[in-house]
Image (cartoon, rainbow, N blue to C red; front, top):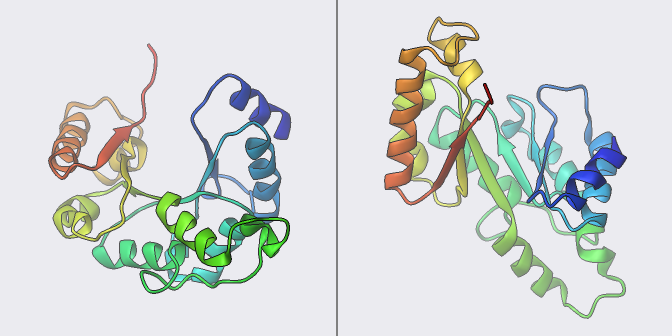
Length: 199
């Protein structure tokens, strides 16, 4: 809820990962979380649902609400990344629609021109992708060739399922694949991470 989001911001967390994939959250409910995070100086990244990279208008609902970034689950191809970049960035880099919206104060009460707002948004918006299966790993080089990726997250639970070890995220074969992806991404100079558990 919004109070817990504000508490996370007060505790010094760097950003909020709002989940629209493994939850029943929709753009309207996530908008309230974005406002709470913003109140405490914490940017919000939204993980969209699987398949929504094909619907720019759906992604833009989170951006209009003030999300600073989009996280794509189940990334399996360069085309998937290209669609996310197109949704998040404004022309000529992408295809994001431009209007007076919350993120640019509806063009009111700001000393910045709309052009400056667009440049700032393009510069600061974040694009993350999740590698969660062997299809994504097999195409990792072509995926990483697409400009605009800020980070890669290796999702161990879905990867374990794809490898036939459902939920065994510490299985040696799963860990080896995670390490492989991590090393390949790091060599490209892109931030990479995965789930960390205690115990």
